[in-house]
Image 1 (tube, rainbow, N blue to C red):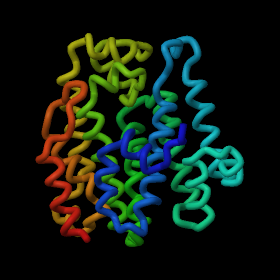
Image 2: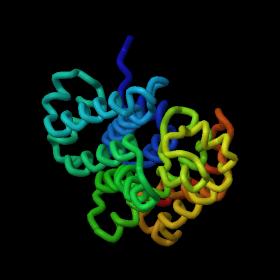
Image 3: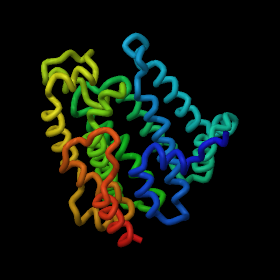
Length: 269
């Protein structure tokens, strides 16, 4: 069986970022697919197995450590013959992406895996995770202005928050815990409870409201989104997701979402 390449992995694992990446110039599109595919690999580490209550996050930490070593030493990725590691090694050796940015992304995933204590650390993890993902895409486009990069980072965090809100029940039942421990204590649960307990507590509406406020606080204004153009495409979906309740399992993106992204994508070219 042929190994999946970065483009296929990005398309199947993260269709929203993949769709946004399709509007990027062809010269940087493959690099964007590699970053998206890497993010998919890192996200796998965040889902605890059924035995997670016994083993804790150890399996996930081992996966993240492997990727950390690949980034520190791209030759290790080449020797592994892992499709995504090979593509990532090439980007690093060409200087297309910065090692420190990739390590920041891993740090954010590790912080989530080990549980975030409160909303302050949650915000930092969002900026360093989904925010850094979008900042690296902006780097592929040649964006260097600090103010613009800050806006793009916030837009990425808003997108990550909107995506979490959109699929919140599914995420909580998957074994992943992206919410801070403070969420549990605020609704009268133990920090050792899981996502299923959180859903059964009847607190979903309260959590959705919190995520809406947090995501909207990240979101740049419309003028900044238009000014940054292609680097800001996920912000279009963020604005729409933050205005809606979670969806049921299997719900696909509507044509309105895709057209909204296309409108900015075509103007930004």
